[in-house]
Length: 219
Image (cartoon, rainbow, N blue to C red; front, side, top):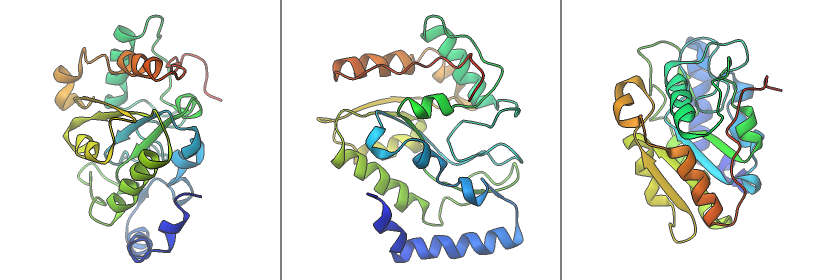
């Protein structure tokens, strides 16, 4: 409800028009009914952690509206595999799952938000929708979380996500910045301990830790 007013603003009409034209001419991910999956799966009132991604996976069948996650039966992409490598080292007892479906995290209160919510298909099309207006919308998501909630931990991975840190009041919330889990920055990502640091911050805020385990089959 806190974001409903955004849908009536002129910039959002421009996003809708842009997407209509894009979908007419190109394959666009995720499917239209999954664009807001992250917000539907983790309502703002339930959020205790935000993982901010850049934009959706751009290969067929991967993106389903939650950053870094893929549906059951889809091979985990390399960035997600690197997240699993860090989790094995960082979280005692974490076992690498045979899937990449992160819905358990979402239901624990981890908002898996991309800064840009759609992308044109194809490996050359990363960030192809980054200028269409989504940044205005996702900035507002962060502002609403910042102003209407208390004690949220923001995990900002890579320079792109870290630019959003200026929207967060760190006297009320926490920001943990680290490298991105992409293969391009894996050496800087490795050993960042972002997951255990997140739980330590949640404890300091009097909130329940995130259970990062994913070894059970996704629901």
